[in-house]
Amino acid sequence: MFYQSTRDSSLKITSAEAIVSGISRDGGLHVPESIPSLSLDEIKDLGGLGYPERAQRVFSKFLTDFSEDEIKNCVNSAYSSGGFDTENVMELRELKKGENILELWHGPTCAFKDMALQILPHLLTTSVKKAGVDKKVCILVATSGDTGKAALEGFKDAPGTEILVFYPENGVSAMQKLQMTTQEGNNVGVCAIKGNFDDAQTGVKKIFTDPEVAKVLSDNGIMFSSANSINWGRLAPQIVYYVSSYAQLVHDGKISLGEKINVCVPTGNFGNILAAYYAKKMGVPIKKLICASNSNNVLTDFIRTGVYDRNRRFYTTISPSMDILISSNLERLIYHLSGGDSEYVKSIYSELSATGRFEVNDDIKRSIKELFYADFCTEDETKATIGKINAEYGYTIDTHTAVAVGVYDKFVKDTGDCDCAVIASTASPYKFPAAVLEALGANGEYRDEFEMADRLNEISGMDIPKALSELKTKKPRFTGSVEKTEMLGAVYSLLKIK
Ligand SMILES: *Cc1c(COP(=O)(O)O)cnc(C)c1O
Image (tube, rainbow, N blue to C red):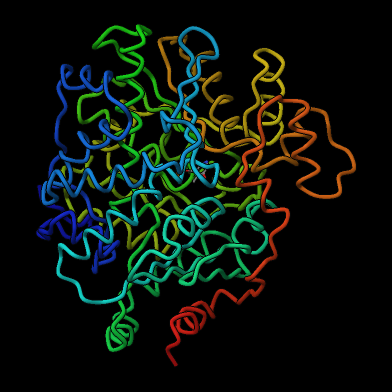
């Protein structure tokens, strides 16, 4: 299995090369040349296995240049070495018959990003060896909050790597900020930028693809790679939990083998829902992919009309990890739906960077309509959903998950389709305690996020994750911020390049 670029379908590289480089030199994203299939029998067999073995089966279809042992070492280091607070790594929680919450936040940073970022450093260091690279790898991350911390945790003190994270100064929760600024490790750097997530992401992409910068790094024995969901090594691990969820539902007798399910995903950069698309294409019986957005509903409009238009107001919401107007991974979907037409992708993406807008052709519009359903939740709807789920089921969800649950309710009302559904739950409510407490009618005077967490604990009865409660005693190490035009300087300074 080889990988191509969305902007150059003649590119032919191994998965190790794709993982090492992160983004393609032409500015495109790496995609598998074909999507491997899983038979229903193979899926059924997964039901009897633990999460690491399920991951191994899925990875072996995509990372064909890795040996079985290499894959095994990676999945075991990530998923069976105690980093997750549940042995199953993910949990399916049935709210009511046919409505399942897929808890993806049992990792060390309490957000679903851990599902991929706990394994990415292992995939990357293995890939570096396999690709015969003799350089130090510098991981550059733009984060809307959760990726940054998850990447820092995954890469801290990983041999042969340095990691630098940029986050929007006013675009993350206090808990998220503290998680990042207190990060330990000798190869880490964290820097706030005066701008929003899109500014951070655009800045990172620019540094990443600048040949002059690459030359400077290379002269210093360093190369860039990415831990953002533009890296194929981030996406592949996300496919696993959709396959795994289906296998689990069959195994638990909740559905029969072959029965179709709907999948609803709270979406920002389009990585998580794209993984569900890949799972569907592999053969997992998924009917609709339900794309849930917050007030930054550029994807809702796109899926409904085929017009992607980022020229709109940017909202800072209570689900900050979804405050995104340029959803990078959409480029991969469009590439696949265009039948691998990299010239087409190149033309619409140069239009996007010139005008902030593009419109896909009728064929692609039709495919998107068939595959996806899209809607969004306002801030009030999101809060109301948290309250409703708590009242009805005694279960507390975070703001991002609430967007998904709210949109799923709209989907059911709109379509009458109540077939079995999996709703991705992407963060622990303790990561966003202020908004969750307000939604539960418990807003008041709190000294800090830790007092909020204690109150939330009283209301929800859910344990406070240790990784969050221990932040209380940690001192911030990284307090600087830079203009969005000064990001390159921050990179050189971390790498001690003049
Ligand atoms: C990153 C994130 C999302 C959005 O996921 P994408 O893959 O970027 O679409 C949703 N919820 C939470 C909590 C996140 O951290």
